[in-house]
Length: 345
Image 1 (cartoon, rainbow, N blue to C red):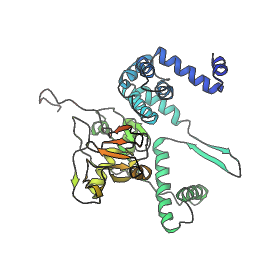
Image 2: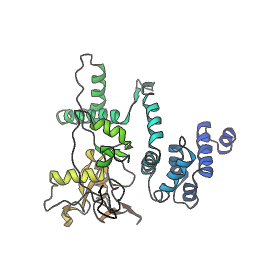
Image 3: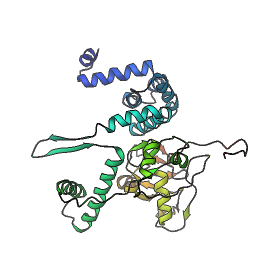
Image 4: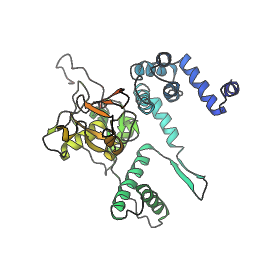
């Protein structure tokens, strides 16, 4: 079947296999995702994000994930859909996820691919928290060097530091990096198993976060959320430059650039006014959000506009008149109030 599909569509065998696999999964196990595809809410590439991340789970878990994703597909980019599916798989199959994670973590390796014009690619298949920490550490060191040496780009500094550290035989040059993990207190204590979020990566299971939190070198920051919405509580200021407390709150709330389709971690982004300060925009949590450099400058381009909606959300209008809505994801699902005051509260 794969070969026939490859011939019919003039595509490679690997592409044909993925197309056939996705089609079979949609018809047999993912009716809600199939309906979204048929209604035009998503395209086949976005649908494949659901099928690929559920290929190793049981039919029962796949059905739960499919139902949970039914209202989380339309209007979202492939990266956001992938993260939501990953979250759902961890939510409905924590035991299976842990077994599969252990298998994949055991397959960690480094590979070398030789390219053209004297270049090669050295890459590592590593646990997410390790890879994120390495990249954050390289980026921090690269920005420090870049401040004193502008003859090289930030990417060049990052690559050079990467090579220097790997070639060093004396054990120096391995500073610890600060990576951001957002986790529910109940998950941190083991009372729940809701997935946490590793900045720049996406959902990670509770057991991994507890291992990271138990490291003597870890530092914690307390964030207070509204249990009814999962959003961080209010903070505000009347000055132009965001105070450190407001900046920390916004970066923790948004976790990544809030422009639809952009997933640059908030700690590498800027605190930006949705309605500009020059247009009397307030410096508070409603009008400020995390934005990467590109999308911070984009709204200044002719024809682009952004209007705040609430709590970091915004409506973006493009030069063609199309509108898009962006709202920071809550840190946890809304929780109903207890029916009585009988412990546990």
